Length: 157
Length: 383
Image (cartoon, rainbow over all chains, first blue to last red; front, side, top):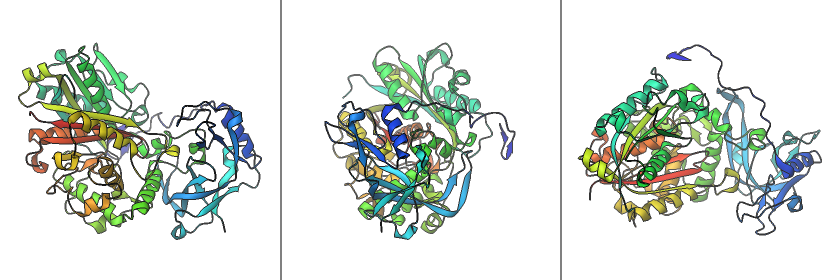
């Protein structure tokens, strides 16, 4: 509750603590489970060839419907198409937190995919980042079939 | 071309600021009352009310339940638009054109100080993937967009920073702006706190509390009530794809929205035919991308255009004489403030930031990460 500047009385409010249960759909379910086998799946439209990652059950480019037959395995290699280095992050409660060690973030187009994914970049020096370099997926030591199995991407030597 | 015309006959905006002592209800009461007063109408004369807010920013769901009383909307036709307020103007215009209503009150409001809107931007992302990966928010996304755009076209950080110098300097003459910085230097902008390279404190919009309101009227009512109606000459809006499946180096959706608005207003060469533009640039580099999408220059030439000083207040096409979103950004109200500012310019009521002879002015609003949704209005004085 805001009274005057700098004078804040806490009341129950946001952030809402709620466990939302989003249905992910069949293709996303497969995508998440296959991460456990260190595989990245995409969905390739059989009509226009646009390839979505993560997979979608519909093609927004040509309105075709897709299903498990459209799933394709991607190589886990890709090209860096954009990047930034974050010096500040949000703590989840609305506060900015200065990072002791800046974090590099990459916009990546995976080989044979059209979507751009946004991923942590690992083992990179910010000044060496540039578009066009090849990057590859880095998995967690133990993969469990969950989104966090992807640790990030790193430049290919 | 529209068969019937719709005019803006009243407007108001708050004194946007970081931490308004006024409550949200007091804030909307003030702007709604002031806009109606200017239009010369009472609550009874208003047929329909449209309010643009966002429940997440407000920190309550169905957030209009408390708002309908201070804006006088109870026992009236009322709808909420959960997008930028400029979309509420489009909606109100259509209600009037449908013939079912004559006078519409549009109000948009956000108090960014309620809860950090950058944190809220995370909740607009795909919850089953991007939110889990955890690297994106509106600032990091804008930083990636800035890098993609600037690297593709060889645009420097200095060129983007000139946008901040221009807008924050312009804001010094606008009493309603939140971040007013007379004499701000390029060095000051480039040495401000770095959030996500190249986005800095002074190349991103501030977190603002603010509200705006306009009164729309049918042609008949406008001529009855106002001696200085500002006409909606054209409007276009466009929603782009989610950030994973769209171009990052250009604002393709804004380009489509502008094309529609220009066509409706009969504009062929916007750079030559417009007198000023008020745009919603949440980040400095975004204004350069907006120039390109609005056809003020060729693709990739946004840096060259700002270098030429053409968009400064004494240039050929002043952009954001008010200071734009970089000077005040009460999200959802920001686009409506642009419409208010464009209206002030046309009526010659912009005071110290008046562009002499402004008669045809563009106003732009946006919603979502990296300006996913865009809306463009062309406003004009009596022909």
